[in-house]
Amino acid sequence: MARALIDPEISVGRGDGNAIQIMDPSISRNHAIFKFTPDGYVLNDLNSFNGTFVDGRRISAELLRGRHTLQFGHLTLQFEPDMAVAPEVPEAAVSMVISLPRGGQAAAGTDEQLRATYERLAMLYEAGKLIQQEVELENVLAAIAGMLRRVLTADNVTVLLRKWEGGELTPVKVGNDERQAAISSSIIRHVIDKREAVAIDDAAATSAFKAGASIVSLKIKSAMCAPLWIEDKIIGLVYMDSRSGERKFTSDDLQALLAMANQAAIAIERARLHEKIKEETRVRSSLERYMSPTIVEKVMSEKGDLQLGGEKRHVTVLFSDVRGFTAFSETHTAEEVVQMLNEYFTAMTEIIFKHQGTLDKYIGDAIMAVFGSPFSYGDDATRAVKAAVEMQGQLRHLNTFWREAARKRGFEIGIGIFAGDVVAGNIGSPKRMEFTVIGDVVNTASRLCGVAAAGQVIVGKPVWDLVKGQFTGESQGKKALKGKEAQIEVFGVTGEKVSGK
Image 1 (cartoon, rainbow, N blue to C red):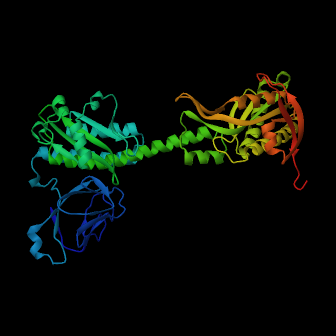
Image 2: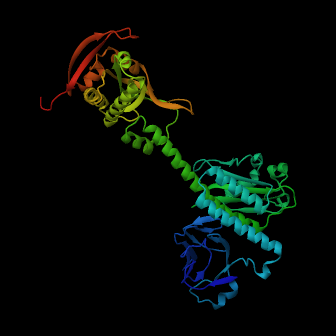
């Protein structure tokens, strides 16, 4: 059927009151509107659910000049100038005609044509359900390729996607179909360069492609390729070809592919968003195990997923270790030891996070924390020492609780802190990595923890020089640390200074 556009505004939709009412479930109640301008008609999408497309591109507004293929939901229409009715149109308007496929009318042709039309409509219906139901990218791609191969009877169906915006289009393996790697680069380049879909009924005889080496070597007889559009960006392509010579793709086949490509692009983008959310959730869950919520938010917003590698940073490293753990273990059951250690680790980790430290790792009954990585707050040494003093105080409360409530003997800890340059980053392999710091500073902090007495906080001179105005303490003299040739001066921190004193 045909519809002449002679009004300044023509609305399209499923609801009553639209100038062009289309009773199709894929059409929104108020789907789109044609508006006349001095330059011609502008097609505006009205935030429809399934989108409005012009020549395969999803649009929000598009000036229409010449012939175009339009798609509203699952329905494809032809838009073209109608010179025959021009004399009847007021001078202020430009006459246009929308030609709709006649579908199942008697003039549409044979039973075979009706069957093909039905199968294509069914394919688009299935594609619509795919968008709503499937979120796994691999399943989406397999379903798209399967539907296209079944309905359009192609020898080869390949989906090409960009891994990132502006990235190279690469074939995506779907299931166990190894044939997807063999595609015509000539056709792919044409679609990318021209930003349009193409159907070739005789590749060897088509002037634009007959010289293509890939077409000759792959013995391609007929082929089609359509871009996958998200707004004005091509996120991928759907390519299909026939090599038997018996199947020649037609303009009707191309319209079906375009409609399918529009649906496929939405499904792929939705699946990718689902994958992105899953990955961000995984990364966040991993980071939350050893970083404070504040640092996690900064990492997620500024860096995203952490990669292998490191960078030089100035940090403050804290080690704590349980004193007399062997004797403590001998007087408690294994279940009691695990329960008490878990309570202890939970309380200490909360304090570290409170002062924006990063939990590097638990080492048996020891804790390693880092202040200043992955982000520095400028007062990392102060934060580390405040955390250490609070950790000692919190352990005293835990010991009181264990003794009075559970009749259990508690334990004490020694803490050592040192500051300096390290390499910080994800260390390991792509399959298993951990965020940590490496350098002599780490070893020195561990050795200082070793010389700290039960209930004591020991810091090196680089730390003391930064915090002595805020904490009370005194020099413990020079100490010989294991693995260090020269002795280093250490300081015992007894608490925070009271304001005004």
